[in-house]
Length: 90
Image (cartoon, rainbow, N blue to C red):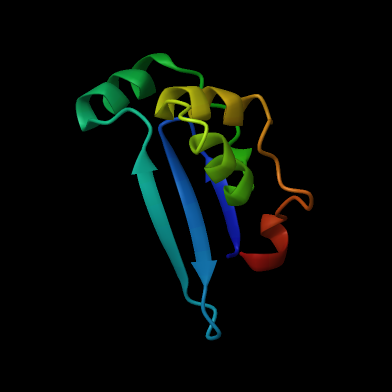
């Protein structure tokens, strides 16, 4: 895994293969494109919240809702021990 982040509208996990190709797995935090679009029209998205997928999965296993996980991610609860520095990879 390269890095993971909650972008507000969605959560993404990025992987990099040995040839430096990057693949993004994206999940819509709102469950529908129309709800996500409404959020984008009214929100101040700010910076993405970096997340540690293992911390996120552990919280998911406690039966937290997808929205609760999103809100907790945005507060920094699932921050990785070592933050991702995009200047190194992009």
